[in-house]
Image 1 (tube, each protein chain N blue to C red):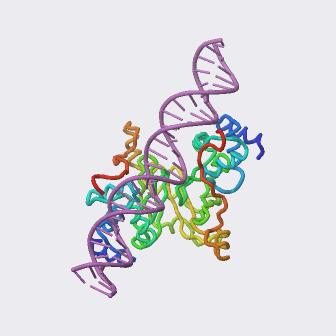
Image 2 (tube, chains in turn blue, red, purple, yellow; image 1 turned 180 degrees about the horizontal axis):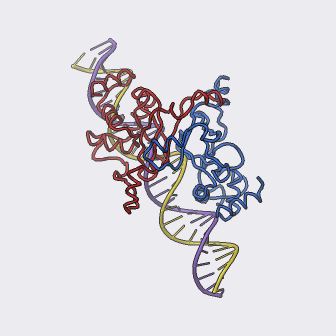
Image 3 (tube, each protein chain N blue to C red; image 1 turned 90 degrees about the vertical axis):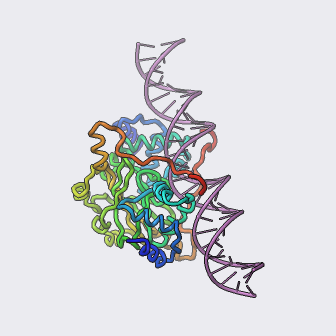
Length: 165
Length: 165
DNA sequence: GGCTTGATGCAACAGAGTTGCATCAAGATG
DNA sequence: CATCTTGATGCAACTCTGTTGCATCAAGCC
């Protein structure tokens, strides 16, 4: 999907395709991982200055409009990835307890019988969150080679003012 | 399960059965819901004064020892319920987006094919988190009767010092 | 020009959970 | 008994993620 498609996609979702929003969309579309706001912020800032509040507002907007989906992990930060409007179907995630990376899995439907759930619960089901917790291959290898820290490599805290945003 | 059983259970798990820990266990065993630390704190304090740090430490300990399990929800607070050591099997949860209540469901095994997951992912699977998000029956009824707030009734912020803890 | 509207920035705040250090009680040891 | 250690708890201050309120700024409209 190129930039033009993305802009069209945003407009179709009723979202004005500003520069920052397009940059966020690019970051989200970049990998098959769900990213925490901090990572997204850092990546967008490689392109342009952005304020963290702006990012949070964009992410909220995207989630509301179905452009992104928000997922909880074992730690305290939500992860965001492209939502139903792009990916077509809801999907689960694999969360690595060591490095915190969260990979997107095939559609949830393969894992959970949502229809049966809706029937069995006295509840209006809006969504299903499926997360596999464990240790990813990279972290397992790192641990076997004697390291103790897992395969983390990102780091750096999400704070304000990377210059003047 | 009475108090004596609980004390024995804690000791068996290698946890000294202090008064506070027993109180926490009672609260967790009380319903078939997963509770946020704030609710647990409030309930324990109906019995005895406790500091929130103590509670968090007890919850961490319980999770490490398999006495409790920790689950993420749509909001930012983790929920805790009795863990594998008590309930025997991992289970999913139904989370109400309006009132924030999180009901425990039957065992996860009924919903997700964990074995297949372990095979298909290049990952050491430690656990599976399944959460159904939606609107519970109580909140649906409350909304139909014209209310807008859902069926919340708890409230009050989790802060320190309810007197001298 | 003057007005509104939506996107963004900035500062200050809020909630959940953590860390470091003090304290206190129960045993173990001399 | 005096002392020492150990584990559980309390308190204050902190971290991190995310929010809120208000200012600003550009684009479009009258």
